[in-house]
Each structure stands twice: as structure tokens, then as C-alpha cells.
Image 1 (tube, rainbow over the protein chains, first blue to last red):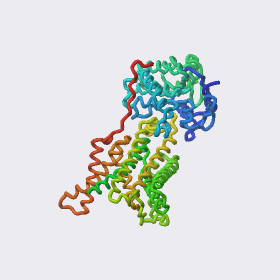
Image 2: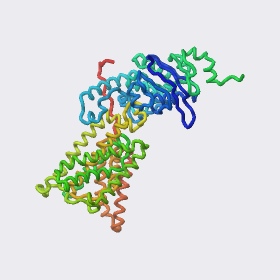
Image 3: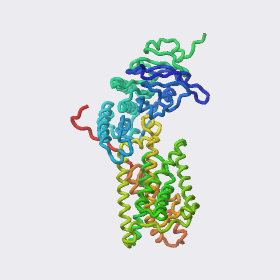
Length: 254
Length: 305
């Protein structure tokens, strides 16, 4: 059974159909790439799957549960975490607070536990703190641990995005352009760190424009164009598909 | 003179309670409650009515004021969930006016603009001259409890999630935080504190009337939190006493300005307060005691990785 299964997903904005019946499945484990020319509907698809935008029609089955149209926090707690294209988030929170925030199962987030204190909350907090420090070390953000997120460079923000996923331990994480606007050296580093996610049981679905990065990391690759899935397969299969070339470069004049 | 100082300290402590409540939602979750005076009034009237007309003990009045404030807060915040965030400010402002007009017009219940007098003070007859001092002690004890609770919330995972919601509610929700629950709880708790502050106010002055709950109080409390440091409970506390001291000392300072009429003096008083607050915020934009980002614990040496 696939981890995520989309069927006939549709969504329009102001009469324009951005998703025109999207069907695909993401299997457990590994890094699945989602590519396609600008305007293919990739980010809208992420918005629909993560609950920010309800679908007009279709189903989002995740881990045996129908999640289409549910609230974002419900979807997130079901184990489907999404990060954002621009390093959006919490500028004033420090790297540490940021990582802690994404920790899974926090009894201390109950108001009563916050006021009266609870053993479970304290223990979990200590566990998460250790995990957060370890995650920061892994991402080489440990020296910046008390810096507010605004003080990070673009690349460090991207690394922190991966940190979010490592802390939340979702079953599937949706990453929107994890290397956009990052220099090649750091891009490699981000790629390295990404490979850690499937090792920890976190499957990845990512949108990316850098084909070298896709070729190196993603299998399978799903290609979207004009609000539908065009094809899917290994990077080489997809690259040699003439429909994919047409979608990117335009149809050859007959 | 001593009584005057006790009076100022008492009112200052009541402002401090309100400021702590406001800081929870404004500093914590970024929610703007322009109807603070309304929740303050709800608490004051609840406790005044149940202890005068209702003949219930004062302590019961205080508890009921706390509950009434919380319930009013819950109703207001839940009725605005479908609106965009800015509208919370407008709805709360309207709420405070509705409360005030209700108190002024529903004479059968609130005695209208005459107000409710003879609100009992705890042990007032027995304490006599010492009542003001004793009451201040009660207030400081309540304030201490509320302060400790607010600081606990501030440093808890709950407070961390609130801050995240303040920075970006949408991202917080995608991160799995039930934003509505956090906002509703925090707002209701904040309103409950305002309600309690109202009750404590009424039993101190023994008289309440609709005119005492003008939006100006709300403005003073916002000034308190802003000058003390938004997002830091200690800041809210310091800010409230600062604003109170400023309000009262300005009254004396303008007496020393020669060649002005009484009306001009009153205007100068407002001007002086404004200038000081502008200076505070100009020189310390984040307030006297700025919000602190809690630091990460030091990694244990030789710990496992």
C-alpha cells in the first residue's frame, strides 16, 4: 500500500483550473522528486495536500486515512509535514526554540501542564532538548543554536527546514525547493543531509528545479505539467521522455 | 500622604494584573484586545452584584468575576474565529463599549450611571485605618500568584507554541499546532485575569460606575506592556507601575510650572506623560525589559550523540 495516494485531485482559483485531476502515489521510503515547468501546479498541490487549500474534488489518502480537506494541524499530526518554499516561519525564535517547537508529542503544550507543571511534560522536554542539540550538531547549526532564525543565511535556513523534519519525525515530509537560491557547495551539503531522512524512516517528496540535484537524489521522479501528472519513472526514463521535453521546451512546430 | 501612596500602589497593582493578562495574549500570541476595559468591567460588576444584591461572600464574588471574565473572553474570541485577525481588535473594542453601555442603561441590574456603591471590602470594619494596607497585601499576593503562573506559561512549551503562532499562525498550524485551541485558551485566561482585576478594583474603592471603565484604561495597559517590554511578564509588571507612577507624578510636576492656568496645566500633564513614554520607546524600542529568547541547555560533556 502506498504511503500517500492522490486520486483525481482538482482545484481551481477564480475559474482557472490549476489542478486538473492529479493522480499519483508515493511509496514508503526514499526520496521522490516532483518536477515540472513553472505553473504546473506543484506548489498548489503541496498546499492542497498539506491542508492549506481544500481540494474541489478528489482524495488524499495518507497512511490508510483520508485527509482531503482536513485542517493543516490535523494533517501534520497524522505524520505528513510540509515546509515552505521561502524559509517562512518564526523569525524571532532561536534555532533551538525552532527545533523544539517541531518536536513530536508535547504534553507540555497543554495549558494545564504549562501552569501546574507535569512530570510527563518535563521528561519529554528534556528528551526533545537532547534531540534538538543533536540535530543542530548534525546540521552544523550548533554554534548558532541561540541565534534568532532571522540571523541565519539562506542556506542555513534551508538546513533548519531539514531540522524541522528531523525533529517532527513525520512519516512523509513535503519539501518545497530545498536548495533554491543556495550556492553549489551548500547544495551538496543539503543533499547529504537530506539522505539522512529516509534512513530515519522519513519518506520525502520534494519539489526541485535543479536537475543535477534531482538526478543525484530522487527515485522515482514525477513530472507534472498543466495541472496533471505527465509521467513518472527514474530520472533517466523521465529525461528521455519526449512529452517531458515538450512540456519544458514547448512543442516543436510541425 | 501614606494613604495616597497606598492608593497609588493598589491601583498600580491592579494595572499590573491587567498588564500581565494583556501580555499573555499580545506578547504571547500577538492578539490585540482593545476591549480590556470591558472584561475589567464584567469582573467588577459581577463581583459587586453578587456581594451586594446577592449577599454572597467576597471570595465567591472574586471567583465568579474570574469565571465571568473567562467566559466573556471565550465568547468574544470564538465569535471572531471566522474573521481576519485584525478584526479581533475591532470586535473587542466594540465589546467594551457594549459592556459599558449595558451597565449605563440596564438600570434594573446595574443601577445605571448612578453606579453601585457600598461594595464590601474584606474585613473593612474590623481593620479600620489599616484596611488600605491590608488590601494592598492581598492584591500583592494575588499579583505574585498570577505573575508566577504567567512566567511558567512564558517558559513552557505552551508559551513556545504561542510565540510561534504570533510569528506566523499558518506555519504554526502546518507544524501541527492547533492554533484555535491555543488562541481561545490564552484569550479566555487573559480575560479571566482582567475580570479578577475588575473585582479587586471594585472591592477596594467600594464604588463602581460605567464611567470608570472608559477605553482609556485599555490604552494605559497597552502603554504599560509596550514600555515594559512586550512578551516579557516582568516587563508588563514594571511597565504597569511605571505608567501609574508617571500618571500620578505628572500631576505634581505640573504644579511647579509657573504662569499657566489650571486647564493648561491639565493639558501639560498629558503632554508630559506622552513625552516620557515616547522617550522610553525611542531609546528602548523593545521596552525596559525586552523579551528574552530562552537559551538552549548546554550539551552535557561526554554525552551520547
